[in-house]
Length: 278
Ligand code: C2E
Ligand code: CA
Ligand code: CA
Ligand code: CA
Image 1 (cartoon, rainbow, N blue to C red):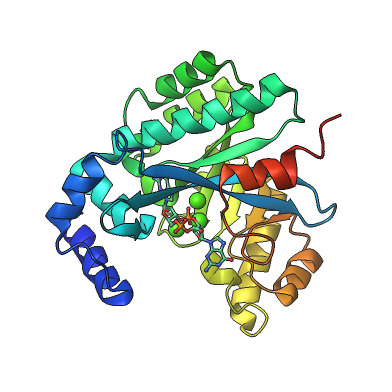
Image 2 (image 1 turned 60 degrees about the vertical axis):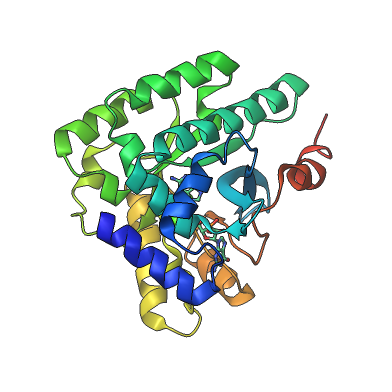
């Protein structure tokens, strides 16, 4: 895992002309990012392709360092995982999201859901479900207003994974598989685990209007999800033609730059939350 983190770092250093001179310095700054209030959460709407309604958002972490500027989560999340900081950061994200849900619920807004990315390291903690339960109780939120996005790579041990997902399901949170189709696990887990939503990885959406193979894979995932009684969300939708293909394949929901980039909470409140107050 350590080598992978390094590789990631180098890649982005070249790609984005990163101003952090080394990983150690980035790590020491990241360690203080929470108390320095450098972390924020952006929210990306998930759009119902049939009705146009928006009832859910994905929470995406942002880090703006005072000295070195904006750092992509693709850079700092691997570093946070490698160093163990992801536990504290992940906890902070969950806390912020639950706080936001509490605010909306207390104000009497219509019910909406927020999906939170869960690192494999977090998910593999024995007391993860208990921590989720504590957050839900602490903020008094409706359990199904919270969604946990878990990747296939977190689902290694069959027994442990099943037990954890079952516990989360019993609490009432919504469970989705992120980046579906990019892991190496067998499909048999889909019938064993209590999964609500499959998120089609954006690599299959990209160029689907030109690449028949991508369109075929996406369409097959949609059918698979439906025949298993699960919901499906297409990620990374950027083009009108992609929306049309997804609609004709009966995909219920999509998110991507075509509809909206991830935006700060104030934008969400202004665009999606105030108008629908009864
Ligand atoms: P992800 O969970 O697969 O999130 C989707 C990524 O695609 C996000 O990148 C989002 O901004 C981007 N995206 C959304 N729509 C489009 C589109 O139409 N086109 C393209 N090209 N990209 C789109 P972001 O925000 O940079 O996050 C990258 C990754 O970092 C996430 O991938 C996730 O794995 C991780 N991450 C972000 N926030 C958190 C967090 O709070 N906790 C954990 N553990 N990981 C996080
Ligand atoms: Ca995600
Ligand atoms: Ca994803
Ligand atoms: Ca991803």
